[in-house]
Image 1 (spheres, rainbow, N blue to C red):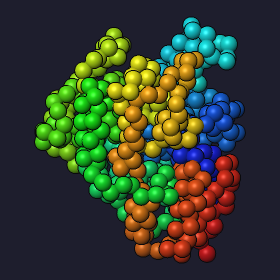
Image 2: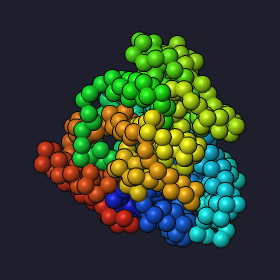
Image 3: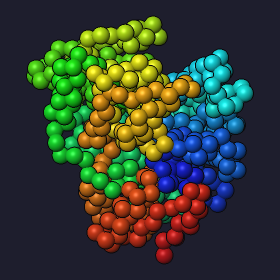
Image 4: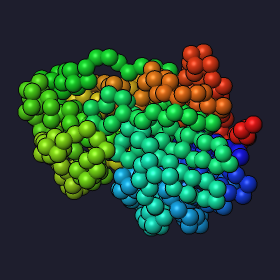
Length: 455
């Protein structure tokens, strides 16, 4: 068997891992590249030849850096199955349709206002492409061994992180390959802890936070401090947020802070149609998280849901303290861009980033201290106070990844560190080698490796 790394190497985006056995090809994840322009341009390259003859696709979870390239795959002719947990199937419908609509809207906006370097600007894919991909989804329950291609069986286990997130185990020719996907945190207040896995011959492990530990300070205290200081200035706290997972966690914390009277009773707005739809799934997939039905209801009742474009625009006219949660989390698109344009120039306001900011994104630039960012062809000054709250991340940190790895009862014969920026991936590689004594590598983009047969 062979494994080809078509993404998720040298970056935290674009995850695509191709497993080949004789003429059988299975792709684990099919994500968008995001961040630096040279990465985003990969989304527009001709389809890799091997992806034109796939037998199956398996998703670890629904985030776009793991699923967002599926509409391109479907547009280019793929008609095979896409296997994922039921919750991932439900979330993918929300995310992929939203991504397609957003791309079409951005292309149309660029063409009407003439700020694109391309004439005409066009979306990477359309809503019709996304709908075509969604017809291919096949739900697979956790812990149920499922044949997915000739001689290949799939087993999914809980990974935490977001609703539906799973580790992927594929067995073939007496060998077992495990892909961690994105691992959640063992003590996450909403999501359940990642399941331990006893054995694997080949392991792919993520390294988003492979070179750092999350801060130990209280998330609730930090969040309260930012909101209270901003409210005293009569400002607005803008929170760019990932629509799935992060937005719901923020809603939960804000509900608790208000309940315990640690922040004033100021309005909280959720301005993301995608996040609104995703939040409803927490009731439907109640067994996948720690919240009670009452807690789910309470966090939703304490938030004003913004549905229309007109409602979104009116938020920019607010003159009283408030919290606005809006996608996207790295400020790469979505309604948050319009709020940044309106709120970032005012020093009374705050911008609170609530998770990892990939290199090359607006979020990373703002956190690094950029004095302005380019929005819709115009440079917008950043005078609002900027905060970054990494301990709200849904990713396991380096120590938590190592804790999960110690759950293996014997070392994998081959371990590959994926889904991390270069320093994070190599730092985790060194830790695994030194602390566990495993054979471990950081693969290169488009590298193919042979999976050693069992002797």
